[in-house]
Image (cartoon, rainbow, N blue to C red):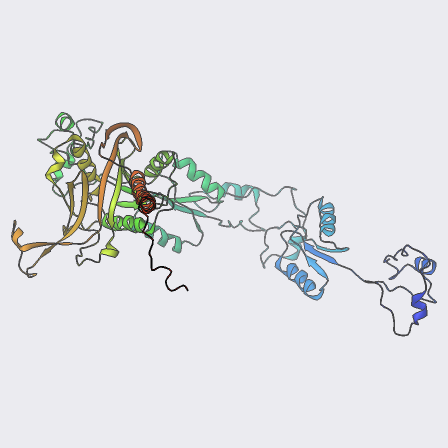
Length: 562
């Protein structure tokens, strides 16, 4: 954009060629005025063009030092509101290098001037009482160094020995101790809601306290709490720690609790095996049945339920139906169906504190495979799922409580072979809901049915319905008054392989009657291709038949052509 031409200038003046190719140097602003007279008179012809007007591009950087008082900061903000051409910046540390820092800021902000508000930190002396005379203030100090401040002790607010030695009580009076007590309040992990609310009540009552996150209740908690107190600039600490003891049954007498332990170490707990709930040998050797009684295995089974990516909506709904039927399961995000899925799933099971896993793997958007695994040591089963019908599409009339415990029934075929026994035990452990689970309801109002037909496992879910009044109790064994109403879902399991490890390992069993869905689809394509080949052969046979048996000429064919 060139300079604007006034209306009074003639067109001849505009058409004149420039005297020089280069533009004259622009006059710079000086402290004496807006333009440099020497540059103007030498380079510019005032008779023709007129004196160049200086365009003011002044920009001012406004900032302040740290620890500035609110009064001076408000003064600075008032100036900022009055100067629209200024730029406000963050606070700058008031050090020896502040000049270099400010020059860099001015250059970065494209400014030409700077207003820097700096407050010097004044030494704050002790407050003087109103009764002290002015002559006392004017007296020179006896020593250059201030007397040592008395520290707070457990016996009182001040140290009497330091006060009487260093301070003259007849003139100034005893120094007043300024209480700067700060308390850190925290608690251990896994604290109950009741004790946590007690802690929060104390926090609301103590305005000088600071609340912090929970601390792990370990042997090193002392060092951790000392570091936290130092970081928070506190001098005291309130730490709420709750230790979880073993639960005692109501049937145990007080005399039994008071008896001393026979051994320092607790007997080894019997582990759950695939053949039963407890190891009989460990029970008889380690535990004295006459006093304590046989240890009851507490079922803490937790099942991780997840699926692969790109699963179809139908199979995902089947997975969600199973999640609603199993209150002791935990649902997780989708897992990529790769070769390393076994390692990933084992890590997820360990992170979720589970002992079993149900993994729904979908391939080609058509085939659904189910992995049932006991983690992390195995065994695991790979199963083809077919004949899937979800609850939403069946719309059956059966209904039962969500979270109630089911009865598991198995057909007699499960006792024939070893692999069926293994599958029965795995289904029993995964689908059986623990008795004391927090999400389970203590009712049995439905049945899970697993039956074997044509080397396939068929699953059904039925509601137990009884027709009786609420006041009347059903007698034990009154099966004639019970009816079963199907709820859903339905699916069929075709076991492919049983592995010794979790999601892999040595093959314990392989189904000889298994045919993959890919082979089934290939055979169907061949059948369709055979139909087309038959059509082509029929056409060729028809042509050969026509050529071998030509028609006799018709004597009346050309009768009407003339």
